[in-house]
Image 1 (tube, chains in turn blue, purple):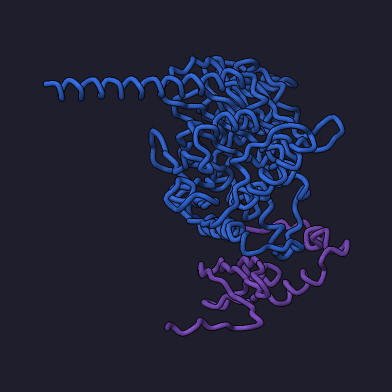
Image 2 (cartoon, chains in turn yellow, orange):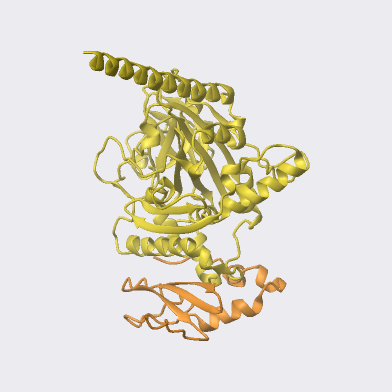
Length: 432
Length: 90
């Protein structure tokens, strides 16, 4: 439970608010790489601000406020040229750094151009996504988290949700919900709607734990039948501050991304890399992306898959959940830890410091801790994951299942072959 | 840095005025620690502080998870009806 003032502060995204200033210290995905290959300029909304993102014929990316500094026409309808973006209304031209390069109907000998620079953001491409930074310069390094740079078959499900991103992030430090929302509730819906629910999600939590670390909070759990020696506890998986959660298991690696589009809209993305050993990955000239369903034809939430259940819970909490009347229990200590982490980092920004997870040093790859053997479920997890999570809506869902099955068979054959060779070698040695 | 409160709407919380646990919300506002135990700066935003106090329940006890934005102190303050000691070792 919070006061209304604290809830208000925690859920702001606007510039000038403590939370909005904190959030402006990070890079966010704002478009798919393929979108700017299909058409070189498009709208983007981030932290309540509207932008035009574009790619010049020379391959440079730019991000400008949507409204032209001249007379406010939308630059998302701009003309992309080799040096930047030209307003469709009167032809004013802006470079990727926001400088005004041309005012066709104005006299050239004045300093008018230098007075009307647009406030440009920073843009980079990584892993099939276009990333933007709209905070104060100098921009930090774009974190090259493992999933965005590793080998494997990529797949991105996404949707826009009508709620504040903090309540979605609070779900990332709430292990207990899994056995109910994705366990008991899943079984209940499966029984009534006639499908199979994966048994691995319903295991009772015996113990949960949370550790703050350099990238956020590591969430740990021991489920019934498992122990602290199992991956779910020994390794766990992290909430990557402030808007990601890294999950994985059974050769599937995923970053769940929750971009604050504005105060009551969150872009939810499931950036997944299928990386089973023992098989060659097909080339992907473009990373496939697809919209995952939130509602059914009756306007009710679709709850027949894992993320659909999560989205139901997040959205039905309200556009900004009212934390003045919530009732947290001991099982919600991860939520209290996250709120404190947000507050600590608002204070750090107010002091002029970099908040948690801002990277200043160039790097090749940031590996995040993440369990491999999920819920002690073994090899069935990969197929459960594709059949009963958002990947089922992927245009490559069948191919992904075949990839995992083929890899499993290859690994098995390799293991059997190795065992056979070793057996033969032993036999020879014995004979010798 | 100024905080852009969205006025009465933000303070109302929303559901509390529809009869949703108003007593608990009021008790939270009344009982939450108001000053940092370490530096005595106000914790409550409403009183000009820069702290955060999240309340959770454990049995009959109410636990306030506190963070002071002024000095960085962080800790739990528990309102308990009963104090129970452990049993002596055999």
